[in-house]
Length: 186
Image (cartoon, rainbow, N blue to C red; front, side, top):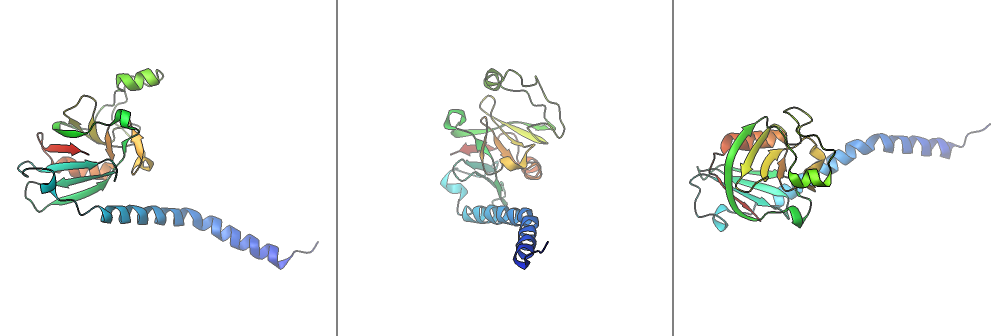
C-alpha cells in the first residue's frame, strides 16, 4: 500500500489546525471582548445621572456592558455582562442597589418555576449557584446584578431579567458600591 504525500500533508495540516482551533477561538473571544469594551468607553456619567454622590451604575442592554463610576469621580469600571433573554424579562429605567449579599442563595422566581417546575427549590452558595459569589438586589422584585456560574453567558442575552457579571468583576463592583447606589438600565 502506498501513501500519497498529499494525503500525509493534508492530514498533518488538518491535525495542526484542529489542535489550534481552541486557542484561536479563545483569542478571538478575547479580541472581541476587548474590542467591544474599548468601543463603549465613550459613556459619561453626567449624561445619565445628576451626581456621583453615591457612585452610579449604567447597564446598557444593547451593548451588554455595565458601566460603574465611583463617588470619587475618578474611578471608572466597564464590565462585559449578560442581559435578559428577551424584552419580556427586561426592566428598564432608574432604580438603586437595595441589598448586597455575599455568597447568595438562589431561589427560582415564580415565572421560572412556572416555565420549568423541575427546577430545584433553591441552590445554596457554591460553584453550581447561578448567582455566583455576589448579588446586589435592585429596587424591582427579582432583579439583581450578580455573578454567574457559566462564563459563556457573558455578552449574551441569557438571563431571566438579571445582569450577570464574571465573578471576579462582580466581587470588584460589590466592594465599591453601597446600598443606595443609583442604577439605570437602558
